[in-house]
Length: 253
Image (cartoon, rainbow, N blue to C red; front, side, top):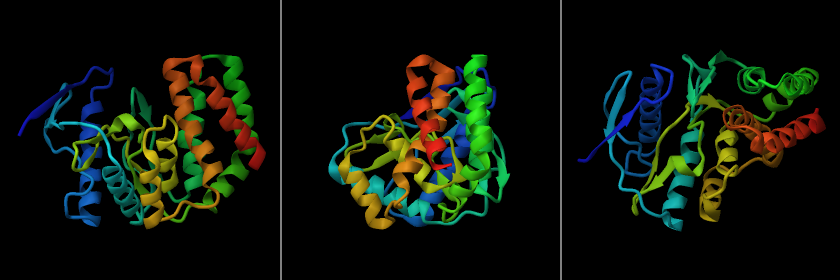
C-alpha cells in the first residue's frame, strides 16, 4: 500500500490531528451504514503536529456510477441521527479555525458559530458592521426558520467541494473534512458552490433522502458561511457571494 505524507504548513499545531479525527469519524460513520466498499476514507497510519501518514489514493476521473455511489452513500450517512449539533472540540475548515461546541438547537449553532464567527473576522470595519447589523436584526427569526427545517443532526463532511471528493475509477473517496453534526443539506449545499458533482450525484442522493422544498433557500444561507470564510482568507472576489447570502437572510426574516 502506498503511503501519502501530508505536512502541516498551517500556523495551527493541531491541524493535522483534528483532520485525522475527522477522517476517522467519517470512516466509522460510513462503515456503519455500508460495510461494503462504497464511499471510502483514507486510513491514517500516523499523525502528529508536523506530519500525517495516510493511505494514498490513485485518483482519476469521475463517472456517473461513482458519482451515484457518492450521492447514495452520503445520503445514507446523513440519515443516521446524531446526539447534538456541533462537535466536542474545535477544528479547522481549510486554513481557518472552525468553532464548535455542543448545541441542542441547529439555528442557534449555525447563526452563532458559523455566520457570527466569520463576520467577526472581517478586517474591514465598515463591512463588518454592515454584516453584523443584518445578522443582529435577523438572528432570532433565522434561528427559528432553520430550527423548523432541520430534521435531526447528521454527521457532515463539512467542506464538501469538488477537490475533497476523489475517484479511483471504482469508488469515491472523501478527504480533508471539517466534520461536525448539523443539517445534512449544508453538505449538499457546498457541492453546488463550485460545481463538479454532476446530475448523477444529486439524483442518487434524492433517491435515498430527497432534498427539502426549502433547499434552494437553505443552500444560499449555508453557503454564506463558506463565502464569508473564503472572503476572510482570499479577499474581494468572494464578497458578491457574501452579499447575496445576506440578501436571502434578510428576505426570509
